[in-house]
Length: 320
Image (cartoon, rainbow, N blue to C red):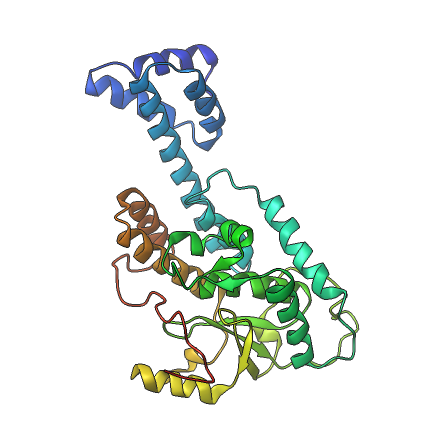
């Protein structure tokens, strides 16, 4: 770690007009990594020179982006089954100081509110009815139809705060709460409108019940799809025929991936495509660069295409 004397000297040199000196100073500071961010933030608050303040701010942002990329790469390599962790990483694109503990408190509150009404002998449809009542009526979650493509709709902390979001953000929160109740609810990568599915339960297991908290489940441990859930439309339940009709309306050939559970990696890739589209609409070049870098980490094509969510008002019972 750089000592205080050397740090003071380097920050003093940020005001130097020689490009080579400035490049050397920035390289030295960036080499310290994200651990230097709190120190630079403190120096930014104390600094009076606007030009040095701007250079400190740029360095802080570059260190935050590097930290963000490392976190996503680590998740991708080691623990890509944990969707919540990835959602928190993506939220740090806009909110680098995000506190995961606060999000877990909010998620746990939703889980406990649903858990109170659960019984051991209720059917899957009854389980989802209880969760829907808790999620949409008690906590007031809803789809953001008035500003559908806003980046804020993709960030889990903002969705938990405003109770509005896009289909995949709502689906991520809904599925996280459901799985903490041991309900086999997983994402389905339907084109233009992300949905959820409820899988057939495995053989009875005394250790698996809505009264034993878990973090995340594995769809491979379950059976066929029993029904689907539309998280953007108050948890509406629908069947395979509705997906058939939706794909026919879009003039798309059915694929198994449109009907079966997808992976958390699939969901994160879709979130990044949505964010790329949202930031491109707003001409946020700085954020576009960050998102594209994260897309490359997940081995994605970082070009804008037509795969972002656009069907914000699909009603499976009344296809338009």
